[in-house]
Length: 447
Image (cartoon, rainbow, N blue to C red; front, side):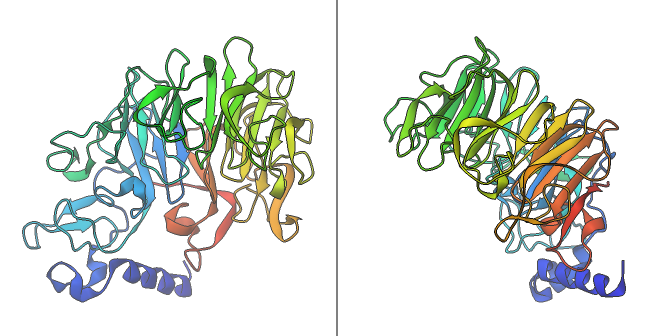
């Protein structure tokens, strides 16, 4: 690291740590900084990765979740990052893994910190893990289909231990408060709150029904428990917009795409009926059948049974991938003639894997989230209106995207991320001269 970079790096850490007079015992605020966080070291391999607004999580082959990024996000708000007990300080003080935290147990520190290396969130064994793009809590599903989240909220089963003894141990280091069970009467496949699929393929949602996400119920209907979407077909796949305004699924019976929710101005629901909400799931205006589906803020894309990708909805910023920026209520073919096996979405971009494991992305590229050099495609917006191959030549098995970042797990179980470096998203290697730069090439996440 260059000398100027190091000075900025130290200055940023000092700002994160807060004034030295407020630290435990009035010590130097950098005394609490660790080049690597305390506790067990991530082995450097993963089977899945999930991306949110400020932080990222991965799942190890042993089923344990590990996260990194900014500890002030909603996802880590219970314990605001990982703490280690500091025996040299007054009893009751904890020291944050990155910055000093002048706080007692159960209190949130006055300043956020950035965690640059994955840290284990307890010892809960999971089959899948997910971070909602809208900065929700990290959640996971175990092998029995029970869902858990590291958060407090109306959708969780709050118990007496959740704010007192609900801590897990990672070696000799305290981890986040124990995950709380999500309320629901049936096992689910994965966690996509506010909606998900049961193991039987039933679309389920919770929260408020403001956009008819729960189907044809009153707009003011509210549920803290996962309930079946009225009128939705049994499905093999489901995707919900990051803003929670519409959802789409692939029907088990006929492999058609069905969507419901808010359809005003953008046609994200895939029917020619803007200016209203679609309360009962309707088939998208197409004869195509699909095998994978993803939803951005106002757009949906799906992989047809034969492998090509099709998109519908708001095409601004190139997010429809057809080579232009217009709108379409009916699915339009993504340019390039590629065939894909799976697809994922951030709020304004999509990425898909081809049969050889190469990643192709289109849409917004303001933060380098497409994995290629930035160029305007819609006025002054950095984007690509057709798929571009992510640089680096990596072979991926799984992808995940957030507002300013995309990550993937390779066939070697390594994790690579590209996009904004802010909040430690890409680890310490990509910090460069500041905390707000971007990397348009994949960066390996290191232990």
